[in-house]
Length: 408
Ligand SMILES: Cc1cc2nc3c(=O)[nH]c(=O)nc-3n(C[C@H](O)[C@H](O)[C@H](O)COP(=O)(O)OP(=O)(O)OC[C@H]3O[C@@H](n4cnc5c(N)ncnc54)[C@H](O)[C@@H]3O)c2cc1C
Image (cartoon, rainbow, N blue to C red; front, side):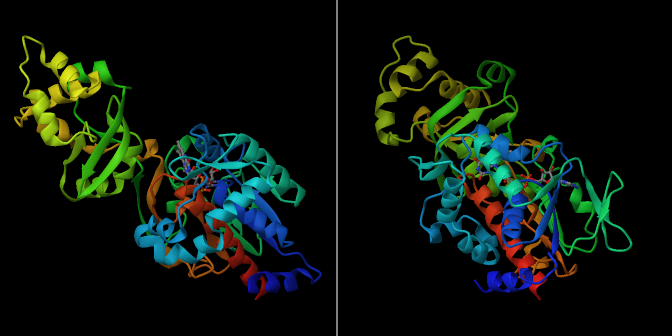
């Protein structure tokens, strides 16, 4: 509230302050909206020909905007980054993201897992309405402007030769997954002297050395109603067999500890419970029945109700020399993960600009007047709406920081 009052005092003076936002993703556009609403002249720059490309891609999966769980549980999803991001996430809480989306004419609904989506189940109508609102607020979008750093006089410099000297700038340059959509992590070279932890895949798949027989038969097949077990955590859900290994929601949920364990010491074993609703002893009883000349795969399909892909996994493990009895294998099938899939194929990015480099208003301590927000910051969270929520919230926090800075 105080920030807004200060800003209004500023804006009641004759000169409108100018802010440049670099990066037209959800974080940058949210910063632009808040600044423009407060009377700041906002110019948004993006290297791509059109804004919000990753936001649009996120829309292909329905655009999980945020999550409806209670705020304390919600905040826990940000792990070690929670302490530094809590204020921003509480200031633009999930309920406010929902209200914002509905205010743009896009009603929302809460899915069975508590995830929140726009009813349109895609991003394009929301993005269109948002861009219209921004245009109405006087925000000017400069596409095909790749920021390349600062000129000697402190101006922001672009690859096309343009330079600008705004009163404040917000960097919202994204992570480095899906680089063809614009965010490629190139900004890490543009901030000398600023602590940046290495960019790593988050919410990613993993590589597995499948046999050619298994790969050719099952790549692209979903593994439904399974549970994955790693490091004492059990995640129920679905996964997908890919050419390179395994991916999908349940894998993403464990991807941070799996990735870190691989980085610490090479391959790790992920446990798969192929029949999480059946107790081991019950399964044993079923599998003790005589095979009566049935092939192993027919027997497993009949007695353990396994789909062909699960039977394939059991056979794959046995060919690899795993000798545990069948019931145990079905309840705890070991999958050796060799490496995370490359960052370019991940849903999001871990690592980035250290939160300790920012003050409480998301301003770089070493560059007064320059703020940062969104996925380029060093936090990670699971899928479930936590990614977009943090981008919106830190974009808003950076905007409030800019208003306070301009007011001062
Ligand atoms: C397949 C997929 C599905 C997803 N689904 C969801 C979901 O359902 N829910 C969810 O919460 N999250 C989802 N996400 C993640 C979410 O889309 C991102 O976390 C979010 O878009 C990041 O926002 P951002 O504004 O920080 O960065 P971005 O959206 O990446 O925007 C950064 C912008 O900066 C621009 N840029 C970068 N460098 C420069 C430069 N040097 N000069 C000028 N411009 C530059 C880029 O062109 C880009 O437009 C998904 C991601 C993927 C890949």
